[in-house]
Image (cartoon, rainbow, N blue to C red; front, side, top):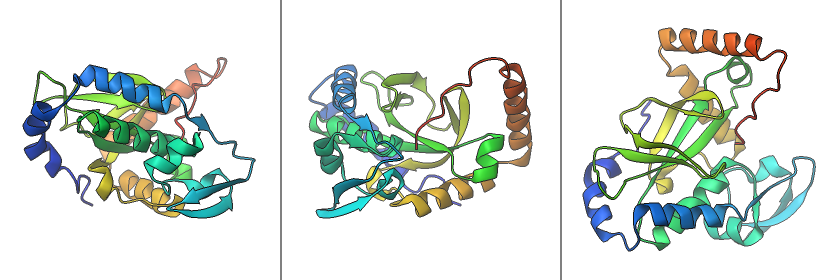
Length: 223
């Protein structure tokens, strides 16, 4: 499995894109956060009628996963999950001349292995003063996860969990366009994890669950 089909952007776009930026990177990120903060997560128990590439569709939250474009998401003010936050965030960055890439990962946990449908989408942005590191941003939570992220990393941390990267690249080449394809992406990603790493992370996950048995469980990342 080619984990980074769009990774070429890192090798030829960092320096030119930084030079072309109209806003300081940190300023662009904050402006993009303001746009994603206006989105409200859909109620999974409620039906919605929303445009999908110009055609109105009616269905529940899951039906709209990874289907609408950034303008449709922003205009509706509704998000079906982290992918919608990512889409709007990246679209906003483009308005300010700031390039970025999608980083999609499958959660390494017992639950994820059982259902093959737990993951998270974040965004990597080249900073203004470096070319070998990236700023890892979570548009869903409105937080910067890492200001000095190594693009060669095979995983990232969010919501108290580890996510193994299954795709990193241009949003235009993102491989999942509906809930079925998203689940397939997570399934393929989980299968690509080296067995030793998988065993170690699952052991950590089990220990964490035992330690938290008498406490509130951390929120899961919305897809």
